[in-house]
Length: 268
Picture 1 (cartoon, rainbow, N blue to C red):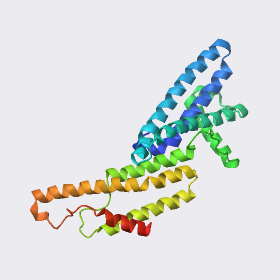
Picture 2: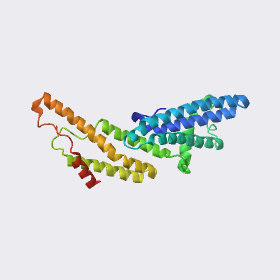
Picture 3: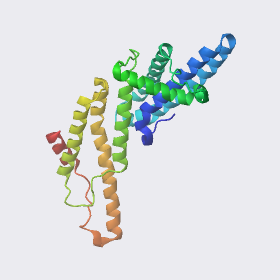
Picture 4: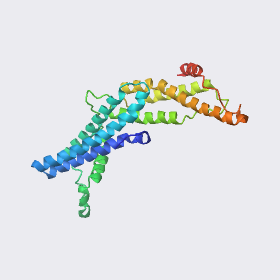
């Protein structure tokens, strides 16, 4: 149930999987048991559900929240953790409410397939599919705890964006080998990326709070991106030191950050 940069785009899927599985098992327990047995089974289920929620929320806070804290957004990880917990509970409540009013088992009429009703994985998938179709006819409005900082859409968007930026820092695409690539062009390249972000935010179904956070994270990202480029240039210097004939063929001069920012502010 963990969220890392290599699976950040699956955040919404993981929330859906956990919430729907919990709703199906909860419904089964409440239907099949009574008294002390009901209480015991629900206690076991709630314990497993809580553990899975904590794993998902803690990993999100550590990896995604930690990334934004590294971009200068101090204290954001804890708020994201609480928001993940709330998003999972909201989804589980939505699925449970649907099960209370709709019979998703009725479609399984083949006598040879009755065992599927006891397969929580299958029934959870059927629940997700049925609710998704129902939502197309009557879209549901996200309801969050008033104390929740970020909606489920916020969390999904911020995870995908953190992955995108972290990949650029890890493997910066700007070509530090070609002498012709100057720092003014680099500033323009980053300004275009910022413009693309702001345009995307205008059409994304996310909160103003998250939109502000992502915009505020861009210049700290730029600094780390430029650090990564300078690290590549340092490697160029080592190459030239070992192979002097490459001098003049690859860049060995550090990024002129004043020039980068001058052009960035001109075009952003």
